[in-house]
Image (tube, rainbow, N blue to C red; front, side, top):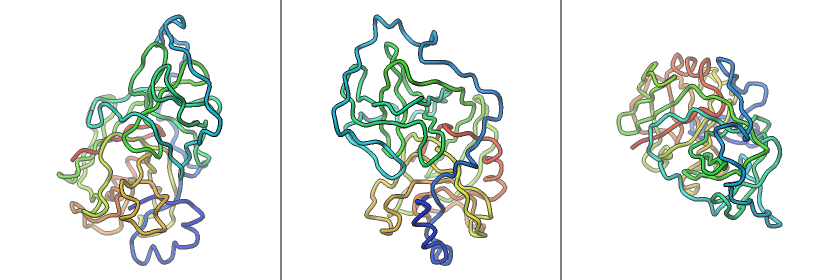
Length: 282
């Protein structure tokens, strides 16, 4: 199941609910998750960063670079070097203004990132630091990272992690390194598999439908690996985690989203924040 833009959803919700082939809208600003405990915030000039003298210079961005949005990605970014790592990512980064994101420290700017995406604060997990630069998981670009030079961003502590095992049909919620709960879930069908690798929670999307047990959906940064495999109306969709009204879990059946029992979804909605890392394993 995939999260879709609100404009597309509004026109097709009735038909989608009837056929059970889609799963929501883009994240909504009013319902973005809030931290469950005060977040530790640090500027990019904190002790975690290296001395400015060792920082490779950030080259000026070329004219005409795209901006990464909920529906528009960008190319030229390096692959996440640890796509299957289950090491917790405990630091989230948010840019202060629209800034270029690079393919390496001192490398080439490939696109712009903004403080919000679809009206929701964009908090991206930090996966690596080098000479004052920070590498983050990117939204709308599967299994890829981008590098940001020092300045114009802050960081916040992340406590939670979600690990999905497609083959075992399980989703595990981990907090501060301790497993909280594991549930049996439904994952993407063979033609529309749940994308593998590391991603993160962008925010929440509200869909008032009994199909989704009347609960919000967690919109992820991942998108379909093969957009031609899903219905044309889902081309701009994102993978999501959501409740399901039927008790038919433990199968490959969705358009890519992870379906959970309502009680499990409620637990996640009450706990996880924007920026929470998610890793999907085979």
